[in-house]
Length: 286
Image (cartoon, rainbow, N blue to C red; front, side):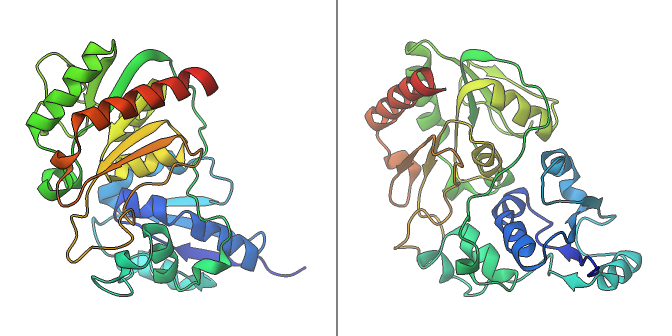
């Protein structure tokens, strides 16, 4: 019997990057059927580990002891594996790639593979836990980039008017994210002191979610949660292929709202139309 290959690596240090790297598992399974795939996660992202439980192509999850890099023991284990995928790779084309490829295709290239080797390039997560139901509730993830990426986020004033629309339409709005995120409206609920995983579980219980091009929305898209994504071309010299950073929804239950150079340029009329349309889709098809 042919020896089963042990494979280490892929992406490890950012939640969104780990989600965009999931299709690499499909390539590995095609190239090395029945291989033993080890999914390594840096310590700073250990709160994301429950997302990958029960994934059909992940055999073992290892949480690193460092926020970045590997210990000597981890390095030795890494190179004891038959195949090693760089868990902290460099981008292929610096500031050019997002004008040519989306985030998933770039992740595949960074791992050393050709995206065309992977016909299914849609990240997918398997829900292993029960979920509650919170009808007419919207989970709103207001900020991307751990509070340090203002170009990726709407202003608080924009969010406030968006919340006014949601409340007028009869939705209960709940703000999620970091405890340090500023409040965006005085008349909506704020969830605090909850783990990232618990916030994801809550979002799965809602009618739909709203967010930016953040790791949370990549996660929720991989679960197929109905979502509205508000985003802009915030990266340097990004003028073509404008949805390169936009999360992918595995069930196609997503409305994208884009505006050049500032999310605040998305009109609230467009936002309300998106809310009404997505709400209708949720009621009709889910």
